[in-house]
Length: 476
Image (cartoon, rainbow, N blue to C red; front, side, top):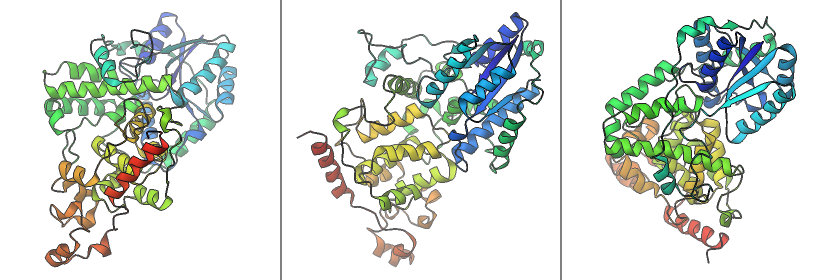
C-alpha cells in the first residue's frame, strides 16, 4: 500500500505535522510513501516576484528532500483531472496526509480534492499546522467568533500553545519510497520550465536553515527593543520571517517557542501580540469567507469610490509626489516587501487620499508581496480602510507628511528608494515642492524636472474621505 504526503505551502522538513505523521505511519504499517506537489496553472503569476519566490522556495525544499533520499511527484493542470489521474495511476493509495488550509482558495481546493479521495475510499488525514490557534479554537463565552482583537488576545495569550514536533531523521532511512517511474514527466517538465524562467536566486531568504538563522538573530539582537524600533523603516528592527511563515519554511511553533524563551521585555510582549494578530485575521476570514470581496462592516458596502485610474497607476509606480509613499511602493515593486508601518501608510493613502477601493490595493499586494498571506493582508487592508471589524475609525486618516517626518525624519529610507531626492536634507525631503525655491537656490536642483508634483492636497482629500464615509456609509 502507498501513503501520500501532499505538500503545499509547508516547505520544511522539521516540525512539519503532516510530514512527520506520514513518515511514522509509513514505517509503522510498512507502507510506501509518495510525496506530491500540485501546480495549478490558474494560480501562477509568471513574472511576479511573489511567484518567483514561492517556486524558488519549493525548489529548495525539493532539494532538501533529495538530500534525504526522498523524491517528489508533480501534478500540473486542472485540479480534479490531475488528482483523478493520480488515483488511477496509484490504485494502492491507502492514506493522504496534508496540513490544512482553513480559508480562501486553499480551503476550497482542499474540499474538492478530499471529496475525490473519499470517493475512492482513501483515508484523509488533515492536520492543523499553520497557526498557533486555529479558527474555531478561541471563541467567546457564547461560542461565537470574536470581532474585536483585544478580548481575543486576552484569551489567546493564556491558552497553551502546542509544542514543536521532533523528527527522528534516522527514520527517514527506513521509508520505502514509492517509485513513480516517470509518471509525472509532463508535470515535472512544466515545473522545470517555471524554474528556468526565474532569474532571481533570493540568496539569504530561502530555506529552513536560513529562516532559523534570521529568527535567532532577531531574538538575540532586536526583540528586546522591538516595541521602540519596529515602526522605523530605515532600521533593521523587524523579524523578517513573514516570508518564511507564508511559505511554511519555518514553523510558527518554532517561532513562538523561541520568542517565549527570550527574556521578559516589552518588545517581546509586543511581538507576541503580532503573532496573535495573525491568528485573529485567520479566524475572521474563516468565519467570513467573502471578506476578500466585501467589507465586514455592512455600513460601508456601498461606498462610492472614485477609483481614478491615473491616481491608482501613479500609486502602483511610486510616482505620487509624496516621498514616503513613493519610496514604499518602489520597495514593494523591486523587493516584494514593505515594512509594516509603510503598508499602513500606503494603504491609507490609496483609500483615504486617492479615494480608491481598498480591494484594488489588496489585489496589488497579493501579486507583489513575497510574504503574501490572504487572511492578514485582507484583514489589514480592511483595518486601514475602516471597513472591517475592529478597524480604525473612518475619520482616522494617516497624514503622509507627518508620518514621513515621524518615522523617517532624515529621509534615510526615502533616499534609498527615491534616489532623485538623495541630496535633499530634512525638512525638504518630505515635501520637496513646498521648498522648491529653496532647493533650487541652495542645491541648484529643479524639483519639477526630476520628481512628480503631489497628486492631491492631503487636507482637501481628508475631508472628502470623511464625507464619503459619513454620507455613503449612512453616518449622518
